[in-house]
Image (cartoon, rainbow, N blue to C red; front, side, top):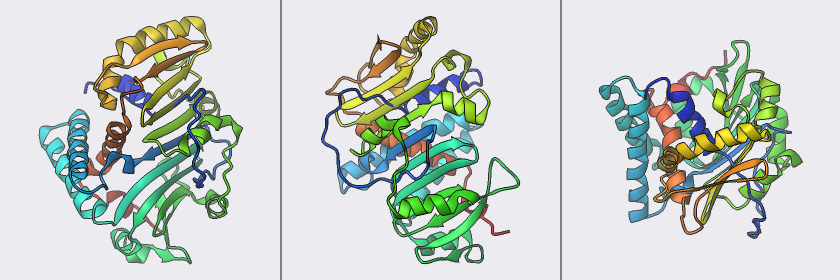
Length: 335
């Protein structure tokens, strides 16, 4: 992929990580979901189990093949050579067979909350082998508590701070070291502190769709202080999206009329790109309602499995592209 297209396509992919759900009355499930960060600007959920990868038989095989094909396509766009792309694809296959399907790192779903570069939480739920993960990190670099194992990771955004990593049999948790105590207490006490600012996310995620997210770019701009979007998307203040069984919808809130019309024109031109990113077998509908632009799949078009598989591939390619499934973990240190 050439450099001039990368920011736009990344932004479009980001669009597929967000929702608006007016009048959605599907009965809510009552089970708790973790939301330990107060007033985040970003709330994101991905259900990897919706891909069918963990099912038995044909469905699992189809999911595996599609995920690997998606990893290959992503790596070919991002890797500088054919050799690197092929190597990344082989590594992705090994990660799935040796780490994920074996049960060492079997992630069912993922939650991510971001307030600022120093205030975030990443939570994975699933099946985790603390013994195997301890070996990957290095037994001399981990310690144990009552619930699992803990270690510290160098922060990618600050040389003076560390990230806290805790792995339990059913949970993997990462956040800045200074916030770990409060956030873990909220998780253990099943205290959801998301707040009303992201009420749509709270409503969506309880039904465990393939994807649900809500982002306030206005809040992010204020908290982080630099441009997060390419120029053609900067007028957008808020985004929301859901990808679920028989309901897949995206909202972009753009209060300025001229900017809204310009963005509508751009998104209309990019509908085929979005279609390919989601794996949709048919065209998506685009319309303006009030101050928002909506992109929606027809009700009979179930994007749950295709979206989940593409999100799994997108996450997996970061590890595969490094040519080692443990490089990130090896950065862990108690120093």
